[in-house]
Length: 229
Image 1 (cartoon, rainbow, N blue to C red):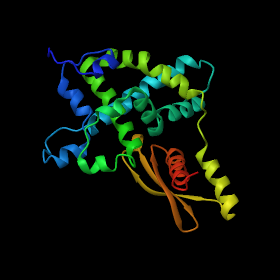
Image 2: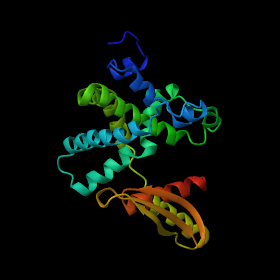
Image 3: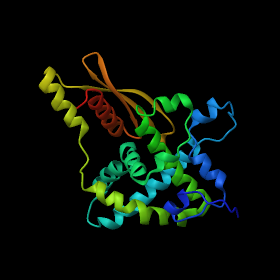
Image 4: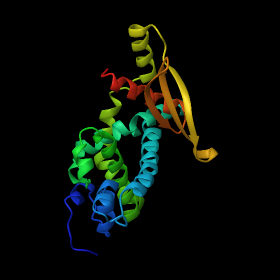
């Protein structure tokens, strides 16, 4: 056991046995690359793990909270709660963004890509909690700190970005947007789709997701954001 106390321990309600694991979760790849310590661990692998941990916790939360809702609607609610925008909001409400380690170049662009970086940080921290303290540590943090934020988030229904974009394009340009799958990757059971949404020949936004529908929704969302809608 170490005797170092990290300020985040109070937030988690848990003290890490391996403090390096927490430091890794807080380290963005830009920090490793710029400090020339390419062997210095960063949080991408932990983010991959935390994404799955959070998905499971949210699935159980929704399953218990809505006993009469069918699977399709549960999936829709889960997608709303676990999307990057939502994860970034939870992280910022908890103040996690104050602990991220960024390279100088990334720090200069902090405002621009902040949401995505903070969402990744959120997932990485959950992955680190799970690895260090098992499911119990992750569950405790989820129940005590995240469930109130999820409850709050559920009060704002998810926007149907595809419908919003269609409405905007029809109103402004009298043309419907079109979606095109640009890339498919990954094994059959875990495919990743990359989709572009176009207005005529103009690319409005790019999205990715584990289904075409999810990728289309993200592409529409980014298209709307780029048009400041």
